[in-house]
Image 1 (spheres, rainbow, N blue to C red):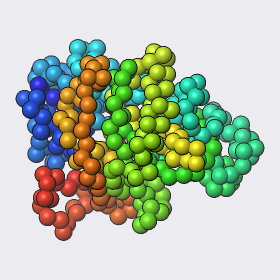
Image 2 (image 1 turned 120 degrees about the vertical axis):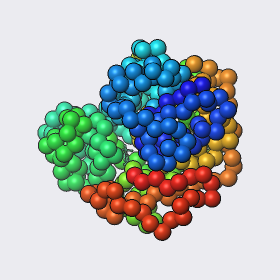
Image 3 (image 1 turned 90 degrees about the vertical axis):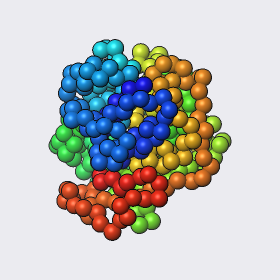
Image 4 (image 1 turned 45 degrees about the vertical axis):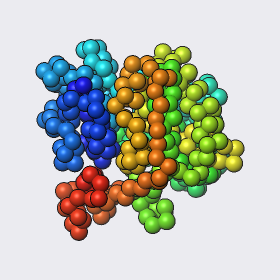
Amino acid sequence: MKVLLIGSGGREHALAWKLAQSPLLTEFYAAPGNPGIAEHATLVAVNTEDQDAVVAFCREKAIDFVVVGPEAPLVAGLSDTLRAAGFKVFGPSAAAAQLEGSKGFTKDICARYDIPTGAYQRFNNAPKAKAYIREQGAPIVVKADGLAAGKGVTVAMTVDEALAAVDDCFEGAFGAAGAEVVVEAYLDGEEASFFCLSDGKHALALATAQDKRVGEGDTGVNTGGMGAYSPAPVMTSEMVERTMKEIIEPTMRGMAESGYPFQGVFFAGLMITAKGPELIEYNVRFGDPECQVLMMRLKSDLLPLLLACADGTLDQVSAEWSDDPALTVVMASKGYPGAYDKNTPIGSLPARGPRSSTPVRR
Ligand code: AMP
Ligand code: GLY
């Protein structure tokens, strides 16, 4: 099977490392890839924002299966374009990717299907959002509706902080992503990430993970993740079962009934509150760096699992996991997640770790 992987992060390096072990694989390409991925796949200099160029490459190489790693091409509709051209793809349609692309969309699905999440309101102007915040009081959470590179969320401990966050959104701090704002109730508990494959009709639970803030002891600002470990101890088998029943299954049903069957990976950001699992957000792709720890623990071949999503046969496969925990540490340039220097070498590391994993810059 000839496979093309789209993406260039640590997440895609982990996917490439795992996919390269599949006996089903005959040819393996990655666009644009990175030096770590180059150890496993042939890198292709195709601009992945140019969907026609990706289709042309797939035709030229007679690609059998495309795995899309990051959210941006999914939200931009790369899966739709490839499917329309006759290619098999792992990853949701642009319509289904709204689960990550629009927080308001996800909250509306939650409300319609009785999925546990913080109470909320959507706003397209500052005065109404501010009046709601004053009425609700703090702590309260203000979110830019669209994709804001993980920066569009303010967990406000005071009303003033929340009001300032509303101004930031409507004054363009997050560009088009902030044209609509979701204000939601603060959820108290322990956060965990839950990953689950879906073919639109069937779901297959994968594994759990937790990631970190910028500072020691999980303090400071939120980042894309300074590291991750799996499994998340808070996700007991009872919590996993409840998450599947109360959150994942109704979402899958809701998406299908709304005309957007979800095919790909649900990455549910959860708050485990006194009441049980509540949904903070959905992402429609593997987490980075959560994918790295998931792939280390996955004993089964990844390729048939991703293919089963595309083929609608997820009920016919299963995944085996190592009970050993896995942990990854992100080395970021000083200053991250604020302004930071790019292309700074990270020294003092052995050229190669004990397993075939090279360090990847983010
Ligand atoms: P999000 O981008 O929606 O995952 O939000 C980023 C972070 O903000 C989450 O990982 C949580 O730590 C925090 N957060 C988001 N929504 C809430 C909420 N309703 N209550 C408490 N914390 C939240
Ligand atoms: N580590 C969080 C994310 O991938 O969104």
